[in-house]
Length: 289
Ligand SMILES: C[S@@+](CC[C@H](N)C(=O)[O-])C[C@H]1O[C@@H](n2cnc3c(N)ncnc32)[C@H](O)[C@@H]1O
View (cartoon, protein in one colour):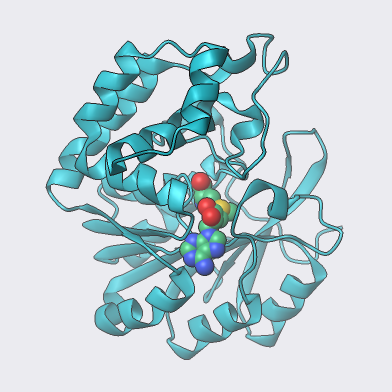
């Protein structure tokens, strides 16, 4: 049974949400976009801060749908960070390489083994490995897709034209500095950013989370999988921030929501393995219940 009220916003009809991120992300948040539209539509902030960006689907959507003027994406993982730096600064190069690359096993192994010499090469390597490894997992030692994912092995998520189109769509927003990226620790960068923007900022938080004995093996999915969740809640409360966060409905998180007097709405959905999984959408005011 749900601990919090069930969200009145329906779990997404995936077709109503354009896929804008070139990265496929374990725990990606396409399902959440209708909540994001409503949240940013009601509170109309100038700027969105996404401190745990990953595939950054929320920042991309918020800017491209004109829900905010600009978004700041932050990511600690070096490989993911290199991808965003390359996508924002050298999108045209990545698009060229997408059109030329033939993802044979040999070329993929080569790419995996060769240390990248430039940001563009590093970002390219991240993109290719993300699209060809099983489950999009970038963490060291992840294997390439074999027969699963519609029997096409490494090619099952390799759509060069689609990926080039997504990169091209990002370019004008990067040029206009409406999409900005910073590599670093979101926990450290968030306080000064909030201080600067105060009530003009909205913060979207999708931190890496592994519930004890968790359903989602966060530590295998992301190279960086530990943050101090209690500190994050405390920070949001102290700054009276306009935020929306998502978490698994784990007992530790339920306690934190209650301790800080935040509001949560619950959504049940199937994860990649067809298990039901409850997700919480947490906000300072009751928005979705
Ligand atoms: C749950 S994922 C975000 C997924 C994203 N919402 C999406 O839809 O693609 C969490 C991300 O936070 C990153 N991360 C972990 N610790 C971090 C930190 N201290 N600062 C910034 N990013 C961090 C991880 O590398 C991972 O990419």
